[in-house]
Image (cartoon, rainbow, N blue to C red; front, side, top):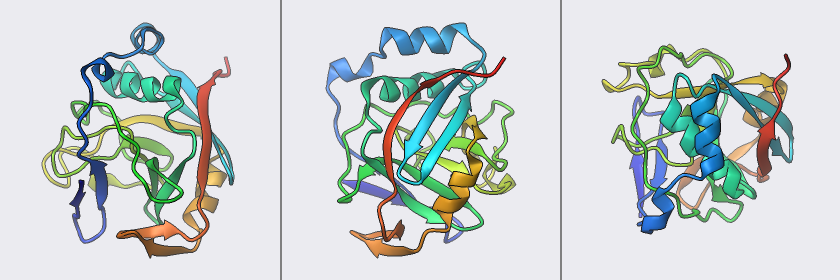
Length: 206
């Protein structure tokens, strides 16, 4: 079942209400080690419109980064799409496939929005529903500064930033400019699917 939240008649996020098996609750050792032992790590998001390098901040959002890296390690994001793009706001993806099918996710994680990181242009944050602790695999990239998403706005909880695009923000600008339609009950869906071909660990420049 898809749960839908709309706030300010604009920021709708969707999450799958699917049950997960017990073994899915355990993070992989590699993701845990990365999240626990470094202050920052990078991933490369490869898409059909170009690539974006994202620096993650496990020191600021440890549970969020650890969960994200588990999905990365599993190859979960391969063949998912950016299913919601809104000019002057953000692009969202990380769960739906090109035929608008949801992939089953791990259990949701606690919200880490009080970490001091802001929803500025290029910031990567965890998507969620009206339940503050409902984030799973979906994330969004802020196209502009969106202070209305910072804790405690807009609902007393805020949206947890856990990374930032450090290379390829022009790709995000191209994605958000894509023509959109309504498909399978979802608004703001690019007419031509913008596919995440894979997400992998990347190096940070010294």
